[in-house]
Amino acid sequence: MVQEMLNLDKNKVKRARTAAYKIATNIQKEIDLHTTTTVERTVARLFGIDDVDSQEVPLPNVVVDQVEEAEELDKGIAFWLGNAMVYHDLTAQEVAEEVGKGNINLTNLPLQDGAEVKKVVDKAAREMTDLIKNNRKERTELKERLGEGPKPQLYVIVATGNIYEDAEQAKSAARQGADIVAVIRTTGQSLLDYVPYGATTEGFGGTYATQENFRIMREALDEVGEEVGRYIQLVNYCSGLCMPEIAAMGAFERLDMMLNDAMYGILFRDINMKRTFIDQYFSRLINAYAGVIINTGEDNYLTTADAYEEAHTVLASDFINEQMALKAGLKEEQLGLGHAFEMDPDMKNGFLYEIAQAQMLRQIFPNSPLKYMPPTKYMTGDVFKGHLQDAMFNLASVITGQGIQLLGMLTEAIHTPFLHDRALSIENAQYIMNNACDLGNEIEFKEDGIIQNRANEVLINVVNLLEDIENKGLKETISEGTFAGVKRTEEGGKGVEGVIKKGPDYYNPFLEIMSNELK
Image 1: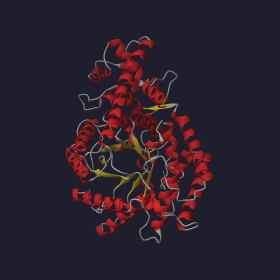
Image 2 (image 1 turned 45 degrees about the horizontal axis):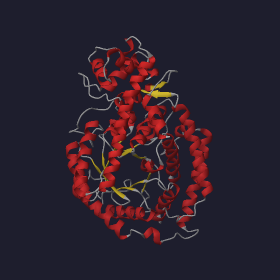
Image 3 (image 1 turned 135 degrees about the horizontal axis):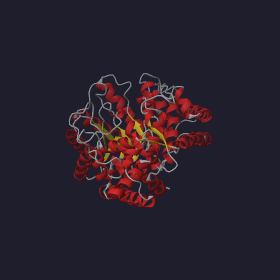
Image 4 (image 1 turned 30 degrees about the horizontal axis):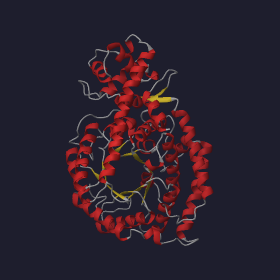
């Protein structure tokens, strides 16, 4: 039960949510008319197509590129794969391998009976979605048997660039008390229009999001989970030009959380907005079906914008992310909506303003776990002050009942965390969250005090902003630089050439199966 410590105007909350719903509905109308090259590669992956050809090109790219070059992708890759499966009596993987060897041209094959093609495609799709459902069931059984850490759950990152070293560091973190481990992705992967293959041993600033890396980490966390007696959750990045492909890999390897934001790629990676909106929808549909909790990226806004002045944009984005996620079939319990402790530490009463913001999100999204991000912008390399800033962040979290706590590192702004940095950070959080465990249940905020007034001020700004976006449209709002001060145009950005209008006979069996079962 969420403590109602703020006297928020429920009518204003309703107005904000209604405006966000209309904004998301308008975007969804365009999403439903289009597909993208990565959505089609995802369909290929969901059929089980994996591996690379002799030129190291991933087979999902090989088959989709061939059909795209023939300008026949508006039917969807499922049709062309199914047609080849019927004609040659092969599996989807076998078809892809033959395409990779140059032995099959998918669009040159004689067209088979449409009903037979659909029957074969649907059967194969059902077998693969059953695999994902089994993974979800296994996660539930493991959580019931092993249990989970208390909330806020302690979330740490590993980022060595070698997946085998990441696995060892992740196990150490779990033994120290971490509940959730994220593997940082290597620099630049978000702009690759393909997913690398195999295990990463020499990443830059992290490792590639690959299915093999996911498998290695899942195995390591399952192993240490049995040792420490609680289920350890695995996180990776479902973002960039291959959002839905990474979601599919995460579903097959039982990832538990994925960073997945409706606007992050547009704002911070300059990926075309139409491409991003279409890709995020299919990726979230897969996340929903796989039982994955998404983490949205509003914390990033505050790295380029002022946390006090722009607090309302964070909450507005949370409302929009919520509505777009619900349209993709995610439940409120799967929404790790983001926010961050980025108030200037030299600001008078900055902690009170931060409490107002964190509590407001907690009350407005009572059923969502929320992901609370630590201070980074004002971390200077002074490890003593940094450790204290992280302690204030942990205190704000325990007072306001956050769900997912990405722990701050005292060495932020100096280097990637060492094992002992992570251990000190976990000790810091455990001390405060135990020692002040029920503080939020024991206090009330003064009527017309600083916290109450600040929350209501931000809420009024959110309502005004969302109703303005509803009138002018989300794409126009983004082009004006409203979020994070970043301007993007509708036709600009990377990946726009991969947006394809669906033909009248377009078919994606996974879209139908998943969306129907999630209703």
